[in-house]
Length: 328
Ligand code: ADP
Ligand code: MG
Image 1 (spheres, rainbow, N blue to C red):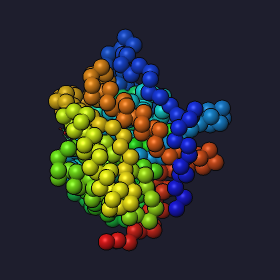
Image 2: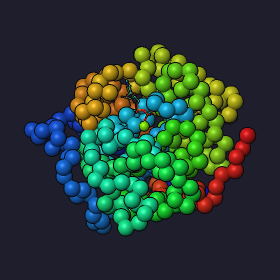
Image 3: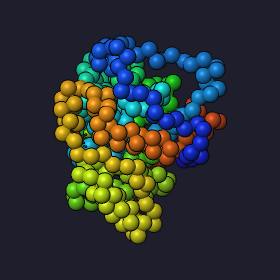
């Protein structure tokens, strides 16, 4: 498969998130979040910008069990990456039970389902979130979107490919579990970030997902994030258990990319539609997410200069066309 090759994970091309995402620059938070502004980033870049362009492979944020914090992590990581001058495309790929837009304070005017009916393009569906993040919101409570067949997925992928134009990195907030359409989304990405909590059922299901990914025909790098840990010791214990189990029984292990503490502010900020990293930038949770974002950028394969135009959605179409035999 024509997957983005793994470039050097370290080096000068890597960006750091050091610049102050905490500063509002005299603007109201709403202005700062840019919620009412039209998307102004949808223009072809100049030759000079193209020559120095760096692109990262797509990252799918996933879990075995639901409710581990995928959407929370996706919204906050995308905001941090957007704040570091990366042009981010954030896709709510939990197609049937989408709620990412809610956490970002966005109110979609149209629905992803309409892309399938035709007549609408990605431009009509995309919205501008915090820090210039281009957001593709999903549908909430739409059964047929939760059960797309390969043909419908292909149609959606072709329609959404346009949204990748001019972006540096794609983040996908995926549904929990092993549904066929969800696995295709994961297998098409350059890296899967598995989010687990310290709960035994969440850890068990995280292992199940890591196992399944390790048996895919293409080897996908897997990162591990422990969310809602009480402290560093607990997070490290969870990461150690999962990495050592994986190494012993699967012959490969996920890369621990950090942890996020339990913090009740997450649900409060979600209700307000403000990412915690913007609303509470000095909190321990925001600091932890910043560290995860830095590690993530150091780990995700970069798209080689010679293939800068390749798109996540092209990979998705390849994965759908290839299918994946069940392996036990
Ligand atoms: P998922 O997308 O995996 O289903 P969500 O991101 O929707 O999970 O999170 C599920 C619930 O857990 C939400 O109420 C969210 O506010 C809460 N949550 C997520 N991360 C944390 C955290 N680190 N501390 C406290 N609550 C959290
Ligand atoms: Mg979610």
